[in-house]
Image (cartoon, rainbow over all chains, first blue to last red; front, side):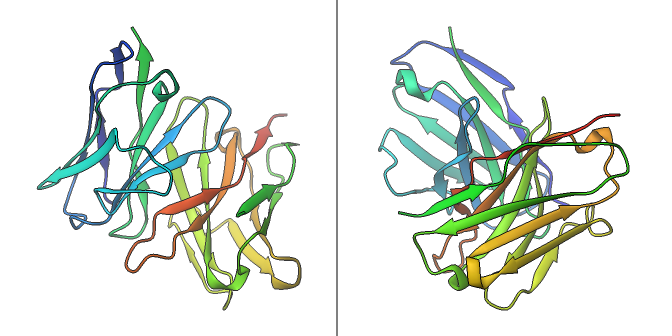
Length: 108
Length: 121
């Protein structure tokens, strides 16, 4: 199984700051088979990014995704109050589909 | 609009089975796969498997292969996930999610609200 390792576990930032979240794959997942989700407490996950860098419908452009080799990155350019949540990466290039353990973005 | 509505919370004893439903609306049911994902307390998301809502074809994660069954009823646009041999480690929120229909992309673009399953003696 492909293991996705997210870092950091927790990111403490202030509104307006830039957030950079990392997701490293244990082996190649293909550069276009990686998604990012946001999950707020008590809610279902929400798709933010698919195909490494494509924003899902309705997702603001402050969210962006990129890749370098097996290192994937989600960047939130300027944190809004509603962005404080847990973020998961997800690979679907190889079955079984797997997720990272999550990065919590909390208010500093 | 696309909606996935799951059944309510369940409390089960160890060794029992649980069956969770996912009623969909707002799109052509048979045109998509539905996946099941769970999140245990303090853990990340865990993929359990998927069902092709047209053919009924199944792919299960190896971890759950022996004790999960996914089915669908096209007449009521509903999918089901049944997990047997429950232990306390199965205490989690279970989600159904729709696989997106973009060429080559199988991320999940719509999710159910989640069903809490608690296993306790």
